[in-house]
Every structure is written in C-alpha cells, then in structure tokens.
Length: 590
Ligand code: FES
Ligand code: MG
Image (cartoon, rainbow, N blue to C red):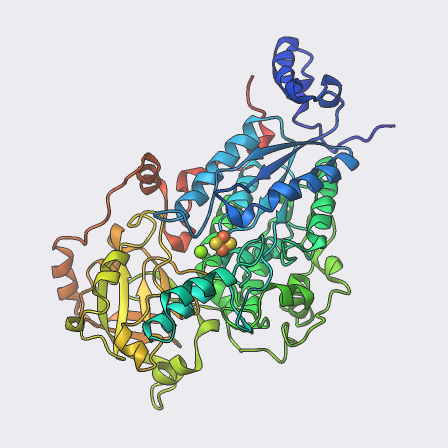
C-alpha cells in the first residue's frame, strides 16, 4: 500500500487536477525536456525543492553545488522527487554597498518560488551569513516543510604556525599593518591563508552563528551546523537531510509547528554560549517576525545576557571551526545549557523529536574548546541592550571585551562600568577613512568613534562598519581599541566591543543625527544607558538644522528597500511582508 501524506501534497494541484487536463499538460510537458517522465511527476510522491544558494558569485556556499547530488540521492531513496533551483546570490565580503540588501531580496524571491511552483517541501542550503535567515524567513512565510542544510565552514586556516580565522584575521592584521609590524604583502598572505578550503567563514562569525541558530531552532539535523565543508560527514548529512525532508513532507512538519517563542529563546541563549555574531540580533528578530513570534529587545537581556561564554572559538576565543566540530559542535553546547536548566528541551525539531531527545549522549569531547557550564571562559557574556537619548535600542557584544579595554574604561575604581568619552562623528565609512588619521581631530584614549548614515535606510542596507580602528598613532602606542558607536552593524568576525545596530538610525531622525564632534557621551553599562550630555534645548535647536547627508539610491531595489524596510532593532524586515504567513495553505490560482 502506498504511503499517504497527512494532507494532500500541493503539487497535485499542478500535476493531477482532474478538472484542468489542459493546464496539467502544460505544467508537465517542459519538465520532460531533460528526462523526467509524466509518471514520476504524477506518481503522488512529494516534489522536494532544493533551494540552491551556491554559485561562483557565492563562494562560501559553492560546496552546495556538489552537496546537492547527495541531497538528491537522499530524496530519491526516501521516495521524493527533487527539483533544484537557484536563489539570489549573497556573498558577504564582495557585495557592494552591502550584502544586507540581499537578505530581504533573496527572501522575496524565495517566497515567490516556493509559493508559485509545485513544491511540497524544501531543503534550504545555507552558509554565508544571510543565506540562513533569508531562507528561514521565506520558509516561515510560505510554511511548507523545510529543513536547513549548512554547507559547513572552511578548514582551519594556518599562517606560520598560527591559527588565522576568516574575517578576524583582517581586523587583527589591519592593526598590525597600522603598527608597522607587517607589510601589505604579508597582510594578503595572512588573509589567503585563512581560507584553505571550500566552505564559509571558519570563525564564529555570522555564518557559523546563523547555522548554529538554525540548529538551535530545531530546523536542521542535530550536529549539522559545524561539520567542516570538506569532511565526509558533510556529504553524509546532505544525504540524510534529503531523506528526512521527504518524511517531513509526508508528516506535514511545517516551520509553524517548529518555530515557537521557546525555540527562539533557545536560539538567543545559544548565541551567547557560542560567542556568536552581533548580527544574530537582527536576523533572529527578522526570522521571528516572519514566523509571527514576538522576540522583544529585553529578551536579549532576560534570556541571553547572564549566560556564560562556553566556546573558545575566534573572535571571542582562540580556536576555529574544525576544533569546534571535533569537540562536539552545537549539540555539545546545547547539552551544556540543557544540563544547567538554561534551554527548553521540549521544543520540537525537524527530526520529529524534541531538542532533549536529539541531545541525548551528545556531550562535549574536548573541554578545551567547549567548556563545562560551571567553568566558562567568561561569565555574563551575552549582548548588552542599551538605550538613551541617542537611540532607543542598541547592542554591545560583551564576550569580545578585551582585558585591556575593561581595564581602561570599565574597571576604574569608584566608577565601575561607567565611562565618558568625547564623540568624534563620521558621516559614513568614506568619511572615516579620509579623516581618521587627521591630527586636527585630536583623537586620544578619551575619544569615542561614532559613525552614522550606516543603518538600513542611510547606507542603504546597513553596513558592517562600526568596528572602526583607532588612528595609527594610537595603535603604535598599543591602544588597539577605542569605544565605538554607530547605526550600522559590524562584522560577526570582529572582536570589537562596539555599540551598534543603533535604532532608530540617523537617516530617519534618530539621536545620532544631532550628535556633534566634541559632545560628551556617557555610557553606563550597569544601567544599560548611553546618553550624550547635551541639554534638551540644544538638542531641539540642532534638530531644526540641516540633517546629515545620506548617499543617494543607485539601483531600483535600493530605493524600494529604503521605502519598505524597518530598523535593525526590529530586524530590518520588509514591514508589509509580515502579514503574509502560511500562504501555502491557499494554492495559487491557475
Ligand atoms: Fe561568506 Fe563569511 S564571507 S561566510
Ligand atoms: Mg558579515
């Protein structure tokens, strides 16, 4: 007896609508031109989409061009029919003015594809930063069974006996360059050595963080996130993922059954424990918004902030992806949290089982890399949420606060966790690069570098530029980090304790728009406050003046993006899109 799905596959409406023989013929015929047969497509088996994010323009995800073969094998073996299709490319490092524009664009494209074609369930291939949230956002909107397959990080990078991790090596090397310790050739060599194989960033940057988040949400097979791209297990997981999505199609195991407030809070907790990227904040917010689940700014404090850093991987720690995987990867971290009562083990996952069931027997095997909960690398290592007269919402990644930074700004006897600094304001990153070494700015240890015009509307897209490096003369004196603040983001691979994602941004009239060089900014970490010490009357006077300049739109999408996108505090989502959810329940008309 043939297997029956919990509810009829939507692809039947394309390929077996008894009332529309003409349309069925039309839908079927062109799939024949590469060898499919009408019998296959009309067999009643589920059509499984493989959302292919790999391409020559998306090198971080290029491994998926190969992995898709094993996904197909798994789908076929489990009785499904695979149809692979391209996703709008996203490549973090190379896309100008920023790949942030692409998350929402890939989301829109994927929603249209999943909705408008005969796809019953989908494998989301992920890797580079925004390929994970965009896929999950789309799956949540359409709400067909979906499973995440990470492409995996690159192998560990080595340069002259030293681990060099992607992204992080750039931020560290540019300080060495400014200090005169290396030349440009050495800089390039260190960067290329950090990327020794196929895969995405091997640090705990945004890519590894977001794949860990997908796993924490219950959307990938346990252990999927951290397997390095070239390892044999990667191909094996591709096969198992292909097999599993077919069962999920029959079980009608949709994102709306897996994504809950509890599963998102689990993700918030995991981000702290792994020392994850500050970009997790807008992405988690965005995925939750599209899933119709409330994640509040205070959740980052209430559920994430107090947790410890358990994972010793760059940029917060020392090691890279291979060691993390061999130490047990994301399941081992989640196991620590579960054991400490800091994870909801009841959440359902793509396996059809709960988180707790998935984690049984998945303890850490290398305690140097994944610490026990009660012997962490750092206590209270989550994102600190700040508010004040310069913005309603911003975050600071506390796991990367260095001992030197803590000593200089936060551990001053008599005023612990409070410091004041003189603002030096830059209008976007070109202005920063032109002027940072200008002696007229008088930048010293008491300065705070501020960048505006870098948010979703100002840039547009929001740029990873807040981790501004001090001027060369300070670096040469050993001052490697100044306090920084901005309405943009920063790279997940950065080890800068910036105050970032400030919302509302300057371009929409947020507080940074009236800030001036020379203003004193007071930061009180214990109170979660960041304020410019400027009188109300003076603020009102300045608000009456000319607003800071913003770059003009250069493409149609930039213009549309600016019209429709919200602030980073709310995830930078296309606000109007949030009302479309569960749309697969309504089959598109012929
Ligand atoms: Fe693509 Fe880091 S640049 S994963
Ligand atoms: Mg990035």
